[in-house]
Image (tube, rainbow, N blue to C red; front, side):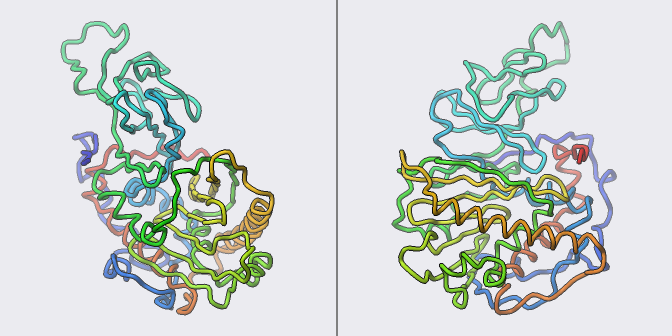
Amino acid sequence: MKLDPPCDPSVTARHAPRHLPRFAGQELGQSSPAKRGRGTAREAGGGGGATLPASLYCDPAVWTLERTSIFARSWQFFGHESALADPGCWVARTIAGYRLFVLRDDEGSLRGFHDVCRHRAGPLTLGESGRCEGDIVCRYHGWRYAYDGRLKAARDFGPAADFDVREFGLFPVGVETWRGLVFVAMAGDQGPLAAWTAPLEARLAGAEWSDLGVALTRSHTLACNWKTYVENYLEGYHVPLVHPGLDAEIDSSRYAVRVEGRVALHDAPLRNAGAVYGGLWGWLWPNLGVNVYGRGLMLECISPQGAAMTRLDYIYLMPRDETVDAATLAMSDQVTAEDIEIVERVQENLDAGIYQAGRLSPRHEGALAAFQAMVRDALSRQSSADVAREGKFAQPPDRR
């Protein structure tokens, strides 16, 4: 459904920056291969140009733009549908500083909202999940909302001639599902989720996920910018040096990455039939990895915690009543530890100010070129008109 942003009409273009920022002497407003080639397949040999400037991985001002231009304008993974089994059940998450929740209504549909009361910005949920009993109730002053977001009652508010409850409904977000996975979109112009996931769906044709449930979740905190980690995820160039255990399972010499639309598909041929990995990694713009194992899969949600920190949320999906086997966890832990060590060192070098920009390998880093072009395009689209129109995306203070 189309969602009109609940912006403050008093926000006008004069409050927005007149010009797009320049970083390390480079304009972001240039045309890019991702924009020109969106919807087409590109092999990993399509790179070879210059990298993004290092300042885009360090400057808090860039993170401010990314919140509104990337994370508020994309389908974001939110959770598994099994956590929302009954009417009134809700799940809450913070995505790029936006606290959101999704609940199941009495008709069985999923609805999503910003977790902010229209009275004085009180929270509507506490914790990560729970169940409403008939209404959504603000935990601060008790305003009550229907499951569709309408304000039903402002508790003990008193007479106010110019107060119309119909004008104080919750701020909605779009909600759609794919293969039992719940996604949200804060802006209403993202198009259907199915169009975003179509390349993954084509690759997974015949794979049955209906019997999968959440078997385990794990989280890791990384001292790096979210883009630093995504770029590490999008190439196999580093595998022989950084991941000797993984390299023993896959044929790194035949590692390939194919980009189609907003999806990157990794092909990593297995060396033997008993390998832990299923030989397929997928990535969905801007921050979700889909790692297929022999008996299930692991979703890798790359959640920025500001400009300098990233949280990895691993959600392991397995056939119901099965646990994640020890070999899978051991390989996952090993690869994760190796990745964390290298991306944190890379981030230290980006922060140091010596490195300004580099070059991408035409053979191995085509997916990075596509990702960096998507980032550049997204930041360039954050024009003065966008800022004026999207007053709802106010920036919270940085409490790092």
